[in-house]
Image (cartoon, rainbow, N blue to C red; front, side):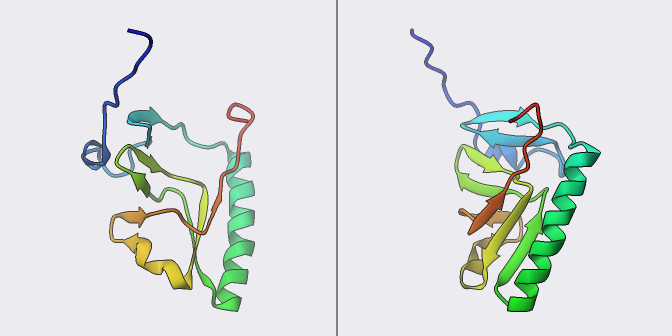
Length: 114
């Protein structure tokens, strides 16, 4: 066969991982995600603080930071650095994560992922 790869994992498998496990589920594959660098965290904190303050002042919704599970499909669960969900769409926030695409996703790239 010509390089056809079967999906091996689903949300059900992902949810069996211990809380805080450094994985994302991408196209059915569990991908380990290393801890971010201090420089990455400084950038993330600065963006989060300013964005969160703006959203709160304007009463527009909620801003969350990683790790937070974003469930997009049976084979895709991501943990972006920062997410914004408008007041009108907060029903996508559930006890165990966010189900559906947030209104805005911020992903800070490192030199190794750029």
